[in-house]
Image (cartoon, rainbow, N blue to C red; front, side, top):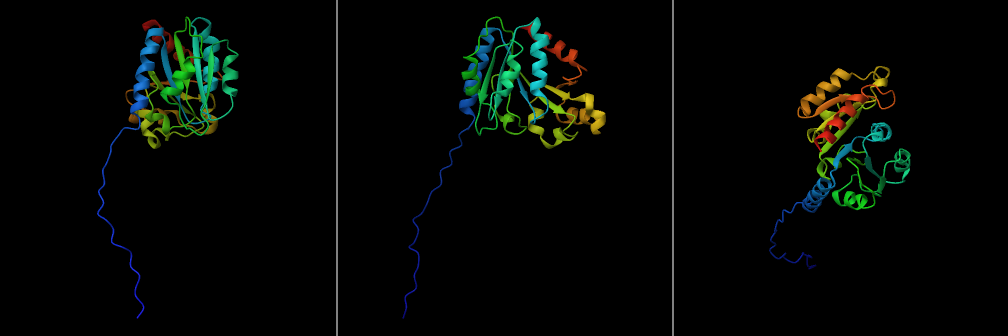
Length: 229
C-alpha cells in the first residue's frame, strides 16, 4: 500500500505586534528644522500640489517680485533633473534642488540637508516646493510654519473631496490658473465650496501667477508673515 505523504506538524507560533511609528524619526527632524528656522528668523512654507498646478511658476514670480524687498530662499523637490532650481535661480534668490529619485515626497531630513547648502543670511521666507503629489506629502511634516496647497483650474473642482488629508492639513489653499478657468469649464465657486467643506480652517485665495490676477493677496499674506517674524 502506498503511504500518503503528509506535511510534518507545524510548531505553535506566536505573533508579536510592534506598533512603531514610521514617521517618528521624521517628526523629530521636523522639530529640529522648526527650531533652526526660528533661530534664523525664517518663516518656512511647504507648497504642495498635483504635478502641473503651478507651484514653480508661482514661486518664480514671487521670488522675482516679492523678493525685491524681502529676501527669500527656496528648496525644490523633484524626482529627477534640476530644471526647476535653474528657473527659480534666475530670480537671484538662493535655491537648492532636492532630487528624490523614486520618493514621491520630501521628508524633513532631505530639507535639513538642502538648507545647509543655502546662504540664508538676511532671508525672511523659505519656500519648500514639494514633489508633485497630493497623497504622500500629507503625512510628512517638514518643519514648516504654513502648509500651502495649490488646486489648479485644470484639475477639476472635486480634488478636495477626493484627497481630503492634504487639504485638511492645509493652512492656506490657493486656487491657481484662474485666468483660464472659464475656458476649461472650471467652476470656481464649486471648487471654493469644496475647499471650505473639507478645509474650513484654511485661508482661501484665488490667483493666476501668469496674468497676475489675485497675486497681491498672496503678497499681502507673505508680508503679514514676515511682519510677524
